[in-house]
Length: 166
Length: 216
Image 1 (cartoon, chains in turn yellow, brown):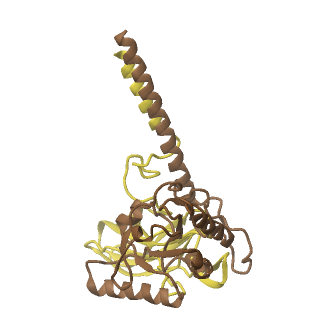
Image 2 (cartoon, chains in turn cyan, green):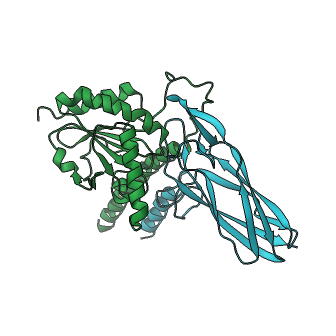
Image 3 (cartoon, rainbow over the protein chains, first blue to last red):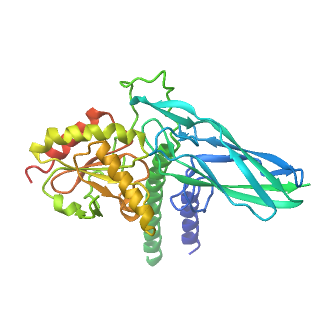
């Protein structure tokens, strides 16, 4: 019986030790559920702003290499723009979100149609006023990514920043 | 003796599990690599060339090649139900696309021309829109359907356009657009592509679907 138990443990170890994430896991989040993200929130996790005064929080994102996402102002109506869906917790007032201008790109197979996209890293600026204390500002970055020949369905990336008003 | 049989059975089970784990890992790695797209680069608009090589996944991209196409019954733009079963006996292309998908806009005119070119050999094409539909919000749903219809009209799509559903897309393993399946007269998937494949690859796959199952 000891041999059997050892064998089962060995197989379990083999299955679990693969370099790749298994189908029931989300890459980067072993055991987790959800969709694989093509854009990643880099920083900040926490920021301090003067209480009761207008301040700015810069959110840094990185897009997977080889991919692009539409900017906040795509040139075609049918394209899905990048947007930040934010929730305002009590004690936080978000006045505006600044999106960077997009860069011009065209698909290799259709060089005549110019797109406005983000690629690599980009920064969103949140203008806000916070009351004194800790506030968890959460939201979702909605984006739709493509590479040069394939497009992926729109996704929502959770974003959270601990904003301390002092 | 009994112990030996038990040990042998355990070893066979273990070996089977190891092979299965390897296959699952391999398939998942392939899928993850496609999602990461490390080998793909963006082309600045001033450096683009329409004749440059594209890198769509054309080698059993869907993992469904050689299998019978999954069942599919979807509504078209007029609300009529269209079933894959009713196309049995004819070579068929099923193309999953979206209005927000740039590469799809490149291949749709190719499908229109190939549809005309091979219609005498029985070729049929179905375009399945994967655009999100708010089925619980009649006003939004109306606008979304109208946008898809406008797009199809603007693109002069000369084949039926169906409205996709999550359950169908899951069954067909759709996670990127365009994804295209080439199905023979017996309902078997003979080729599939994920991403914008070169026109000549698409035409070769159509010929394969026409030729396969022709005499059975």
